Length: 292
Image 1: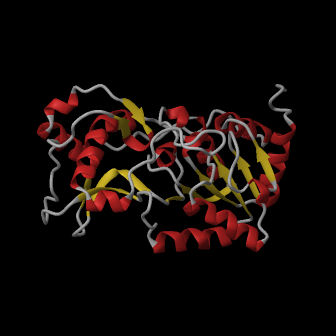
Image 2 (image 1 turned 90 degrees about the vertical axis):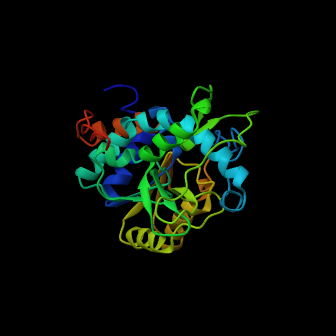
C-alpha cells in the first residue's frame, strides 16, 4: 500500500462515500485544470485574472461582443481539444459503481459526458453551442468558429494565451473591426449557450438539481471554491436539510465552515486513490470520443 493510499483523510472519504451513498456531486473548474483548461481563482478564492464578461455588458455593448468573440476565436480551438482527465474518469467510474446518482457541474466543457458520466446537469450550460437572444435558434459552436474565422482572417494569426472557458488573453488589440455573424434564423444577436456572470441560471435547471439533491445521501464537492452562489446554494440547502458535505479542493472554499470532511488534495489524485480504497480498479472507464 502506498503512502497516499493510507492517507487518513482518504480513508475518511471512502468511509463517507460508503455510508452516505448515493451522492450528489457538484464539480467546478478544478476538475478540468489537468485537461489544460485554466481556472478562475487561486487557493484563496481570489481572481487570478480579469473577471469574465458580464451578461448585462454583453447584451448592451456591441464593442463588448466584438471583444468577447475575438478572444473566443483564439481560445476556442484549445478548449475544443481538451479531453477528460483522471478526475472526470474517476467520477464516471463511481457513477457506474452506484456511488453517484447525480452530478451537477459548474463547468461548460462537456468533459464529464465525454468521460462516460450519464447523470449530468450542466448548471452553467455548454460552450459547444451558440444561441440567439431573440429566437429559439441553437447552433454548433464549431460551425460558428468556422464562420468567425472566414470573416476575421487578420485575427486568426494573433498570439494569445488560453484563459478559462474558451477565452484568451488579447489585451491591447483593437477589436472595433471584428465581424460577428448574426443569427441565421432571425438576424438577432448570438451568444454562447452558457450562463454568464450576472445572468440567472434557468429556473427549471435549478429546480431539477435541487430535487436530485433532496434524494441524495450526501453532497460531495469536487474542484470548486464555491465562490459563485449558483454552486454554493447546494451547500446551503444540504446544511439546512442536515445532509453531510465533503469537499475535495486545493485551497479554501466558501463552505469550509459547513463541511463534514475536507481534503486539500488534487482532485485526480484523491479520486483515483479513492477507487483503489473502495476496491475498484483505478484504470477507469475509457473516455467517450468528443462529438465532431
